[in-house]
Length: 140
Ligand SMILES: [Cu+2]
Image (cartoon, rainbow, N blue to C red; front, side, top):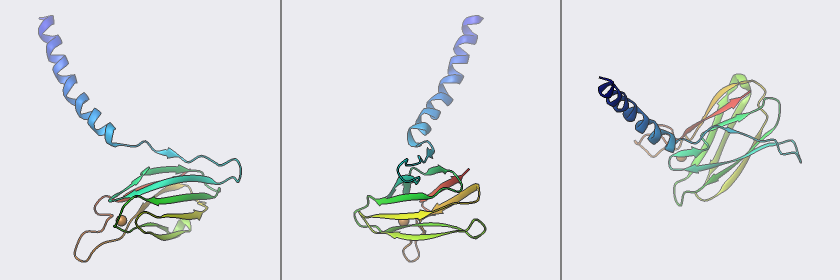
């Protein structure tokens, strides 16, 4: 009796555990953007690829300046970085050509969770955002 229960339990645990492992391998944890002691800037590099931002989730502190180095690692496809929230005073739209690095600076003042994304698209095709090129800026 005990033997049968034990085997059943193992079977149930093995399935979900294997699936979890596969998901975790694809995820990059949120980045708490560090404050540069030299100039007080919250500075991070964000890699742009087709069709992703890495890290995809950034955590910053309100009231302190942020500098993002947007680095494209594509060879042809141009991307951009759009972060817009009128109520929070955020209005950023910057093109990042293939293989280039562009710097954006802003100071978030209002805590909240904001989406950033790439709105590039070719005629009739879905936008890069629709292909998953989207990320989260969390302001605390
Ligand atoms: Cu794009």
